[in-house]
Image (cartoon, rainbow, N blue to C red; front, side, top):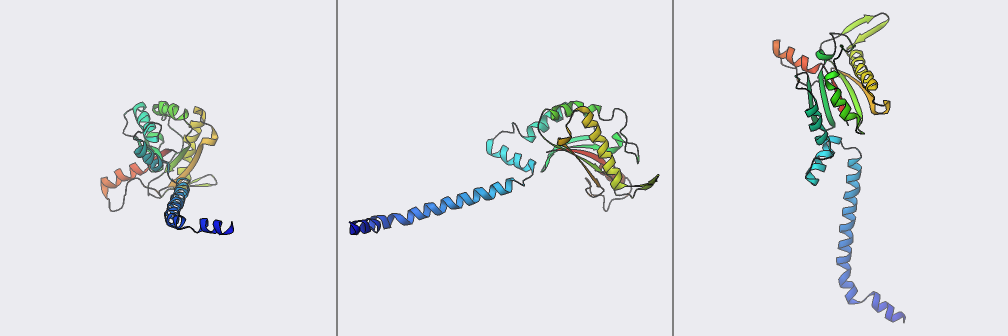
Length: 214
């Protein structure tokens, strides 16, 4: 009986099948390893890139940020001060600061965000989170306000806070909102090597408040 078992275990037929079995097993392990690597990557992947891959694989943009961006563009009024586009980290709604605030101030102008209320209502119906970013230009800003020192950093944060307060009043829950002040560290337009009017235009575009839908 023992000899029969030994023959079965070490039979020529079984030996011939082993390499193909182990080769298939190795392929399976490779696929599983790649799968886990992809899972790890997706955990930190930017939303825009993920939806881009999703659209390419599925052949449709339905239910992605691209779909939402099209709806938001259709709802927004044609306006040179506002641009809506999909970036690698989500939908960006760029609003030039001159349309929202007076120079050096962080209080929203009356009715400054009303043209975007339809856009806000559409976003409110989703589960996306919003980062409100404040951006200034590269010109130094320094002012004493009582005992407080105001700089580009505080100005960018305060302006983002004003937009967030408006969104809270509009109905967005606090858990979906985040305030970020970048000062002049993330220019939209490269202002280096620019002079005169070109520099003024670049700085105007860099002074902005952005809502990142992610």
